[in-house]
Amino acid sequence: MLTDLFKGLQPPSQHNTFGSLRQGSAPRRSLPMTESSQSGLLQGLTVSRWKSRASVKWIVLVAIIASGLVWLRFVQHATASSVIQSLRPGTMTKPEGFKIIGLLFYGRRSTIEILECYLRKNLVSHGGYLDEIHFVINTHNEEDLGWLSEMVKQVEDYKWVDISDGVIQDFNRIYNETIEYDHMYVKLDDDLVWMSPNAVPTLVHTLMDHPEAFAVIAALINSATLGWVQYRLGAVHSYLPEPEPPFQPNKDAYGPKAWRASALPTYKLEIGGKVEDFPNTEKSGAAEHAPVGSIGAAPYANHRWLPLRDESLLPETPIAHTEYLPDGQGWKRWAIGAQQHYSLLENLENDQLHKYYIGEDGIWNMRYDRTNVNLLAIWGNDILDNLPFEGADDEQLISVELPRKHRRRKQRLTTQLSNRLLTMPSENLVQTHALTAHFSFAVQPEMYDTDLLSRYRAYANEMVCSSNNQIPIR
Image (cartoon, rainbow, N blue to C red; front, side, top):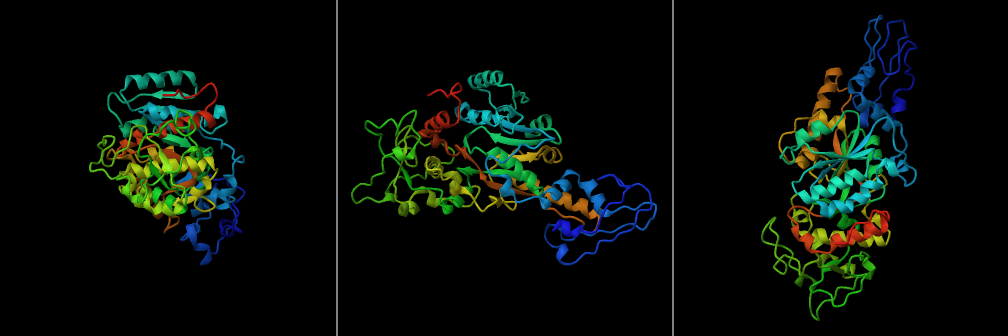
């Protein structure tokens, strides 16, 4: 424990807390180190003093000054209660002393008009954690820009940020001109169509409680890798696409207000048929949009998926093909993503979001593996200190390269101060208690041939959006 390591070590009376030592005749103290006290995150921590009577300076205080907020957050984490206690619904309180700013890359109205209801609820002015939200323009579509312009006029804490000059996704310029030191940022993509109620607060508190983290990332529904995990956690259910349009469907099962899985009819197999006979959801092309009715495509436009209501058949449905790979089947095959979306809606109806959770603290450590970064919390300092970015793949940069670079920089810093005085890994943590639904990857255009946008819109209008902020039915 950190308190055991510092037992008996008291700063001299002439010392300003976390400041420099004044000259004086403070009593000399030494801190004995044992093998057990050198274990864990503080392995290799040594405390020594210089022999100069006129300048008693402790190496550990030099480390505090050198590493700044990182060290302070480490001490806070080491002495704090369990993270799960602070993340219970209704017990979280917005931290003070810095802003929490939403940073959203705006380019698709069809999804963001659903997300906007969730954004508004997360503003401080509506009882949330986000002091303001910056919409970084990432489109040239005049109609979509006009819609955002009207939205920004309506909400004081929405900010229009256009620094593109015709260039889309110039991340170095975007981050350099929008990020400030000593604030926390919640980065959001515009194709999120659902967020768990405590997603943003949970990301914020997890980042504060884990100073070793470079970023804390929300667990995605329709993730290239986490679908493999969620399938094995029991969060994904047996669904298949309906082969033909329904005849006189119930309005609760198909239509602008339909989202509940319980209203859907059960998928029926033909006599003697097998689940694997339909559908063939592996198209020949990559990002090409397969025409409706073709191999690997939707059976009909705006089609729905139906539950088999027999989990023994789950291994024969598309989710069984998912892989724990950033460019595997979970990324390539739209049907795997669609099945996850319909499963989420079923879990929402049955109040079973806990099926997505991993452990009491919810942490899934990526260990420098690539993962999707559609919703995350990160300190502004950790972005600005690593500019300029090389390359245009911000997912690879944020999830792999920058954490490794950050770790090496800290190792060099601490080596200069003392022989392995403090080595803190800088890894990305996925917080599985913070959930969000990612509509589709670029290689999944067939997702727009489902009725999922309509279902997420219906859920938001009923459960999230205020009566005076309903999403128009399309």
